[in-house]
Length: 393
Image (cartoon, rainbow, N blue to C red; front, top):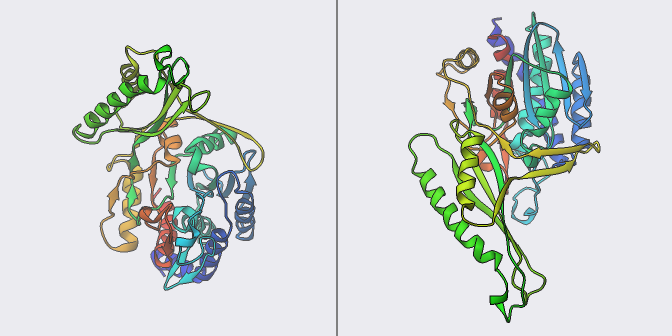
């Protein structure tokens, strides 16, 4: 039996276990910062599948290892999911893990618990099939991705002193090979004012009125970026807050939040100049937004929201290896794409310059929505791809 036939036969043998593990993961409402049960289940499954080493790090990320060779591949999918407060709009309950008509239903089924299950079984099958000569494969189930972007992947790499040769991010891609995405920065702009009684507004300085001019400038910048040629960044005002002593007091403070998507050319210095221009001539000031949270293991997490764009070129060795693995399996040229959304690749490729690609089952258009689901066929196909990829590295 040739290698491709062996891979397909092996995935078929574990198909029911793969499906059941995915459903078990979906049944756990692992909202960001509440991933403990899902992390423990993942570590338990890795041990059952005879991983060489399994650990849960100080933050709560799960890291499993098979093989011990000098060539190192890290494959990551995140454990956390967004809330499902719209349960009444679901055909299947959001944490049911129902299996119907070849689809696994529920929050996280596409983003990214099917991917994670595929990775966990792929690592075990790489070992079983004897494909790890000279190679090491790490499978990480990272946490807090939905709200803290790449912070926990960055922490994992630092805490473990882990520098893989290659990284695969298993976010949903409709089984296309993803070669990057734009970066993400979040800024606040705050305009101070002077409070006065609302019956005497001339005695104060209304911070909302000061902000009005800045908002106009944000709109102009948004239009400019949208009409830039080629791949470009964007800016969107996503939240506005004001503060006043009461409903009959002139606001003495106003803050807006900006989501700035970054192109490869958008350096922090260049974007800082944009922000300076937005507040020029006013007493307003801007800052990079900082999130602070606590992981499920009780460890403090801080994220400074400026993560760069990243790209792996089509001619890069990792892309060529992935394309060969894909064509061998599916007898067609590998489809390439770039994600529209952010992933933990902002740490691996954007910050650490590790060659990174992505591929996952499921459709990102279904993520964060009612009736999220993932097909069993795409889950099995992704698992086959993950296994075959290691043979090309």
